[in-house]
Image (tube, rainbow, N blue to C red):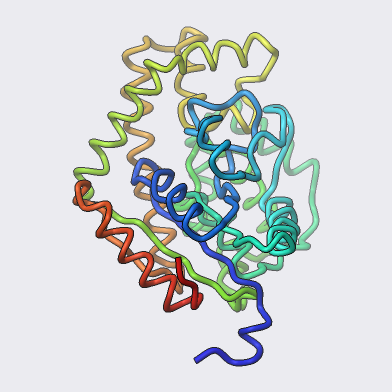
Length: 321
């Protein structure tokens, strides 16, 4: 039973899951049925000109349902989880003000969780000299060596962050350096009380099937012109070391274009790294509370999966289609 306090909280619907699990198709159908507007919960979709590799909703899909948090930054501009949280909080207010349901859809666990539970971010401060020292170390010794440094002081954060995610690895090291406290411990201290009447649906799938879908998606991205997209970004002056170009697909294809390895090797690396990424996504979401899981392994059972989700939404948000 909803308390008076619950009724005063804004409703928020969230759909999470690993890459290639089928979030987009489900989200469009759900958004239409519940009069929702979609907020992208993907840290890379904020960047303009990065469409194929981030699997953004197509212009046709965005014409069906209004989408937010897409194409709001140039690839050479920084973007943080704190800014994502701030923008999303304001968007949720605005969407409610239009009489619609805010609906976050994506796979970037920390970003989504920060909004759902109003995380308070570290005020540990910064040390510019330390940060530059870590950048120089990574350039001289490689991304894996920098990642190993984080593993030594904060193994949980190292497990969550890909070795290529240099900016976030350095920030985690900096927090430990400045405050003596691990980022992972700070995250555990969060209250995890939501300011929203919250419904989080998680999609899962047989691991072998998910990996097959990942490989098929990457083959499709290559056919759609991922190489040309990355080449265009480099020609425009986007640095291969920028945060955006460390994203899946962009780093591997940039490596090919810069002559570090063949195109075939780049695709093999991309498929491997995406499988590893999906595994990390699932690990993150399984540690989150409040997620109602739906197994979508039987692809032909889409109507059944929809009915399962409708039942969850009816229970959590007291909403009918």
